[in-house]
Amino acid sequence: MKSKRRAMLKKLLATAAGVTGTASLANAAHDAALAQATDTFENLVFISGVGAHEAPFTIENHAEIVLKGVEASLKKAGSSMSQVLKAQVWLDDMKDFEAMNKIYRGRFGDKPPVRTTVAVAKGGVPDRSLIEIDVIAYKTV
Amino acid sequence: MKTQRRTVLKGMLASAAGMASLGLTEKASARTVARTHEAAGVVNHQEIPMFSASTRYGNLVFISGVGCHEGPNTIKHHTEVVMRELKKAIEAAGSSMDKVLRCYAYVDDIANVEGMNKVYDAAWPKGKMPARTCIAVAKGGIPGASLCEVDAICYI
Image (cartoon, rainbow over all chains, first blue to last red; front, side, top):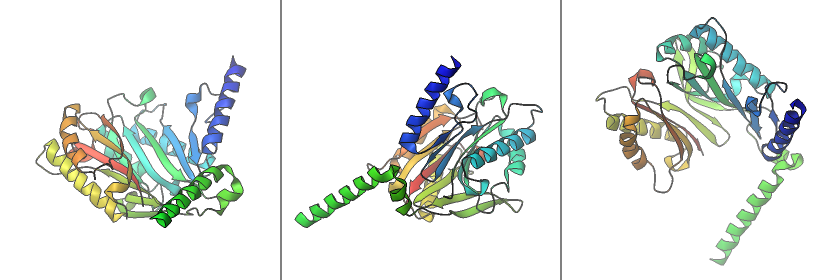
């Protein structure tokens, strides 16, 4: 079953690579093709939404985890925080907006990405994350 | 007329060739690629850079979500302000309303979608409406108590 899944995944990746360039997996051993964390097209890099799923369930802790996760995904894709063009921030609760800003600011250098922030339905970010962020970036080749 | 057609044909062939060579590294490396990006209208939070009004990478332009933070609190007024300010931001970044590829539109109440659409639809040049995804977020889920928010990806 596992090898079958892996073969399927491989095939999927091969197709993705054929169409769009390269694709990398968050964790090859991780279940499901859902888990693709980054995709690239020429120099553009697309990073999946990153959430936080561990205690303490505070916006400070979750924002920190999420930003570090985004940074790790960017690095893996050959990009960096200072090369992010657009960020989408999803909050579980609008009351966390200011506290999120305090963690978020300054993370992307002096040419920060554009940003759109909204609060979704309460409990609307998967796995009880208080915040989720996805980004579009580029890489230097 | 004939030469014009020939030029058009030439252009088409050239772009077809360009598309066909995408997978070839030698050809791809001959294309000019932006090495860095530009950011305009940087918004600071207590003097620390937080986000930009727009970023540009090559010919691609990204515009931050635009909300409305003034009365009257009607969806008509808020959408009018949002679309006016979005247009300003797009033009300040060197693009225009006929070069927008994609928008995300948010309302904080699904009951306002129709009202937003009336203003939103009229804001675009005929035949140039971008792709759009529209969703209702949590009540009060748009910063600064805006009833709607729209962001954009466009080109130059």
